[in-house]
Length: 369
Image (cartoon, rainbow, N blue to C red; front, side):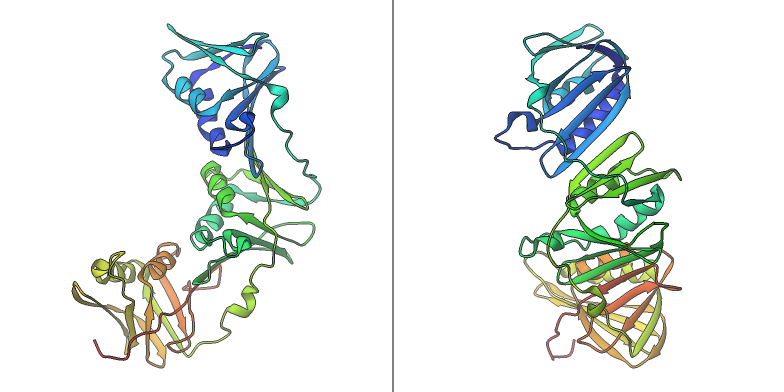
C-alpha cells in the first residue's frame, strides 16, 4: 500500500474515527484503525463490536492495500506531522512508513484481514432527516439517558416513528425528555439507540441543511452523515411506557422566563454540594415562583416573576434535574404544568409541545423554611 493525502484531512478523520476504537480488547485489531486504499480513496474504519465508524478521503494512491494501525499512536503522529501532505507506505511485513516533511515514522501494523467485518444493515427501511433537526432532537433528550446498568434499555433513547412523526424519548427513573417533529418515512418503526452512539453522532452533525439517512435493521442502526457512516448495535428490552408516565392534566399552569428561572435555581443551588445535598423547595403562588434551599452551610431564598393560573403548589426538586430541563429548553419562556406536590412537573415550550420534559418531585420535610 502506498498513498499520499493532505495532513489536515487525515488528522481530522483519525480524530473522529478513533472514538469508535475499543480501549481494551482481546482482539488486537479492534484497538486499531483499518486503512484501506482502493481506487482514488482511502477508507478508515474503527469498530468495538458495538459501535463502528467509517469514512473515506480522496487520496493519490500508487499502490492499493489495507493495514490496521494502532489508533492512539496513529492519531498522535498524524496530528504532529509538519508537512501539508502525508505519505503512507506499507510493506509485505506489515510495517507502515509515515512521512511528512522531514519527519518519518515506521509502525508495525496488523494484517487488514484480521479486522472484523461490519454487520450488514439493509438500506430499505429507514428515513431521512436534516442535520440541524436531528442534532437538536438528540441534544434535547440525551441528558435524560440513564447511566445505570440496572435496566440497560434505558441507557439509550427510544426512536419512535409513527404517522409521520418522529419521537425521541429518554428516561432515567427520575426524569423524562421527549422531542417530537414531523418526518417523512415510508413505514412506522421503533428502536432504541445507545446513548454512547448518539453522543458520537451528535459530534458529527453539522448546522448545514443537508439531510442524513438513517437505516434500521433488526439489531443494528446505521447513520450516513456526509462522508461518515456510523453503525451501532441497538438496545433490546422493554422500554418504559412513556405515555402512561406523562400526567394527562394539571391543576396549575405557569409561564416563566427560561433564563431568569435558571439563574434563580443556580443561585439557591450554591449551598448544595456532593456532600451536602438538599432539594430546592419551590413555591408557585400569586404570580411568582419562590425558591428556597437549606443545608448545613446556610440558607438561601430567591424569587422569579411568572404568569400563573390555578392552585398554589409547594414542591421539591433535585436542583440538577431541574436545571438540566431548563438548560435544554428552547425559547425565552417555558410553560410549567403541575398537578400537586407529588406528581411530576411538565416542562414545555410556551406554545405547542415540540419538547416535553418531566421532572419528578422530591418529598419535602414538613418544617417551614
